[in-house]
Amino acid sequence: MENRFQESNIEGRNAVLEAFRSGRTVDKLFVLEHCEDGPVRTILREAKKQNTIVKFVKKERLDQMSRTGTHQGVIAQTAAYAYAQVEDILEAARKKGEPPFLFVLDNIEDPHNLGAIIRTANLAGAHGVIIPKNRAAGLTAVVARTSAGALNYTPVAKVTNIARTIESLKKEGIWFVCADMGGTQMYDLDLKGPIGLVIGNEGQGVSKLVKETCDFIASIPMKGDIDSLNASVAAGVLAYEIVRQRLSK
Image 1 (cartoon, helix red, strand yellow):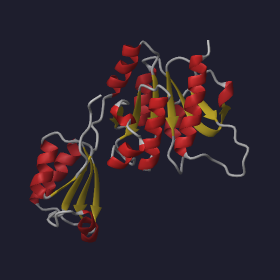
Image 2 (cartoon, helix red, strand yellow):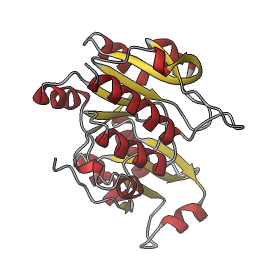
Image 3 (tube, one colour):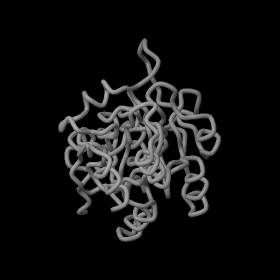
């Protein structure tokens, strides 16, 4: 799967505007606060068309990020890898003649967690990963390194609304299970067939709206003195229960 882009911070008004207009995937746009002259407004319009996250920051932040020293009040953070479409993930399952198995990540913010989850998804035989456009880690170089090469083989799609995407995929016959301490013990659930595994944010877990959209809520039995697993570890534990059930006849 040839989907590599070189990650870079693009600096300067003309360069950033050209990046948007050429179709480059911009994960975040950093703009000098209170700067709203004509060229910057044009860049912001392009960012809005792409649903790019925009952060207004102080000059000191931009100076720290800048490698050229000539950022002109705007720095665009582009993706290290190109994003797939949700349909690409379903097509990958069809080509293998397998029921779809996908990961849906509800606002994973730590790039190391995201990379580790993508690695697990690949090793567990998942056909792809879905992440949200806003308030979550994108496909940065850190994610690529942590995935240990899995990003070359596992498509990652970025969507505007996770709950709506789940609802749409349910019409394709896919069932969704999310991880939550208040759910049914995972060993008591039937997780065979077309399945989507939903993993929540590191701090808040799965959001209320997304949880209500899922068909099953699975809890991982825990015997220790702390109350939760790291998001990437929880993803691995649940993923391999799904693998176990898919392998059993």
